[in-house]
Length: 90
Image (cartoon, rainbow, N blue to C red; front, top):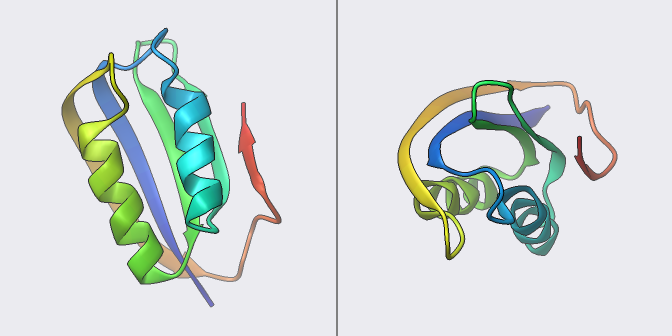
Protein backbone atom coordinates (compact mmCIF):
# COMPACT_ATOMS: atom_id res chain seq x y z
CA UNK A 1 0.00 0.00 0.00
CA UNK A 2 1.12 3.53 -0.76
CA UNK A 3 -0.06 6.79 0.77
CA UNK A 4 -1.17 9.38 -1.77
CA UNK A 5 -1.76 13.13 -1.68
CA UNK A 6 -3.74 14.93 -4.41
CA UNK A 7 -3.75 18.74 -4.44
CA UNK A 8 -5.14 21.67 -6.38
CA UNK A 9 -3.15 24.85 -5.74
CA UNK A 10 -4.75 28.23 -6.43
CA UNK A 11 -3.18 31.68 -6.63
CA UNK A 12 -0.33 33.01 -8.74
CA UNK A 13 1.02 29.55 -9.54
CA UNK A 14 1.47 29.45 -13.32
CA UNK A 15 4.40 31.06 -15.10
CA UNK A 16 6.52 31.21 -11.93
CA UNK A 17 8.36 27.86 -12.08
CA UNK A 18 5.89 26.11 -9.79
CA UNK A 19 5.78 22.80 -11.71
CA UNK A 20 9.56 22.57 -12.12
CA UNK A 21 10.24 23.35 -8.47
CA UNK A 22 7.47 20.99 -7.34
CA UNK A 23 9.17 18.23 -9.32
CA UNK A 24 12.51 19.10 -7.75
CA UNK A 25 11.08 19.08 -4.21
CA UNK A 26 9.25 15.79 -4.85
CA UNK A 27 12.51 14.23 -6.03
CA UNK A 28 14.33 15.43 -2.89
CA UNK A 29 11.57 13.86 -0.77
CA UNK A 30 11.68 10.66 -2.88
CA UNK A 31 8.04 11.04 -3.93
CA UNK A 32 6.52 9.71 -7.12
CA UNK A 33 3.58 11.10 -9.13
CA UNK A 34 2.95 14.08 -11.37
CA UNK A 35 2.24 17.82 -11.57
CA UNK A 36 0.47 19.88 -14.25
CA UNK A 37 -1.14 23.24 -14.95
CA UNK A 38 -4.91 23.26 -15.30
CA UNK A 39 -6.82 25.36 -17.86
CA UNK A 40 -8.38 27.45 -15.06
CA UNK A 41 -5.02 28.70 -13.76
CA UNK A 42 -4.38 26.20 -10.96
CA UNK A 43 -1.62 23.68 -10.46
CA UNK A 44 -2.74 20.10 -9.85
CA UNK A 45 -0.46 17.41 -8.47
CA UNK A 46 -0.54 13.90 -7.11
CA UNK A 47 2.22 12.61 -4.86
CA UNK A 48 2.86 9.08 -3.67
CA UNK A 49 5.25 7.98 -0.92
CA UNK A 50 5.72 7.94 2.84
CA UNK A 51 3.22 9.85 4.97
CA UNK A 52 6.03 11.94 6.48
CA UNK A 53 7.33 12.97 3.04
CA UNK A 54 3.79 13.73 1.84
CA UNK A 55 3.16 15.96 4.84
CA UNK A 56 6.41 17.83 4.14
CA UNK A 57 5.39 18.21 0.48
CA UNK A 58 2.00 19.61 1.53
CA UNK A 59 3.68 22.23 3.73
CA UNK A 60 5.84 23.21 0.75
CA UNK A 61 2.80 23.41 -1.58
CA UNK A 62 1.02 25.71 0.87
CA UNK A 63 3.90 28.19 0.62
CA UNK A 64 5.12 27.56 -2.95
CA UNK A 65 8.33 28.76 -4.54
CA UNK A 66 9.53 32.37 -4.61
CA UNK A 67 7.55 34.51 -7.10
CA UNK A 68 4.39 32.49 -6.49
CA UNK A 69 1.46 33.35 -4.26
CA UNK A 70 -0.58 30.46 -2.89
CA UNK A 71 -4.12 31.47 -1.95
CA UNK A 72 -5.69 28.05 -1.37
CA UNK A 73 -4.77 24.37 -1.47
CA UNK A 74 -7.47 21.74 -1.83
CA UNK A 75 -6.25 18.45 -0.37
CA UNK A 76 -7.36 14.85 -0.79
CA UNK A 77 -5.62 11.95 0.98
CA UNK A 78 -5.91 8.34 -0.14
CA UNK A 79 -3.98 5.08 -0.23
CA UNK A 80 -3.80 2.04 -2.44
CA UNK A 81 -1.50 0.03 -4.62
CA UNK A 82 1.45 2.06 -5.94
CA UNK A 83 0.63 3.75 -9.25
CA UNK A 84 3.84 5.58 -10.21
CA UNK A 85 7.48 4.75 -10.89
CA UNK A 86 8.83 8.34 -10.96
CA UNK A 87 7.73 11.96 -10.80
CA UNK A 88 6.70 13.69 -14.03
CA UNK A 89 5.71 17.14 -15.22
CA UNK A 90 2.71 17.02 -17.57
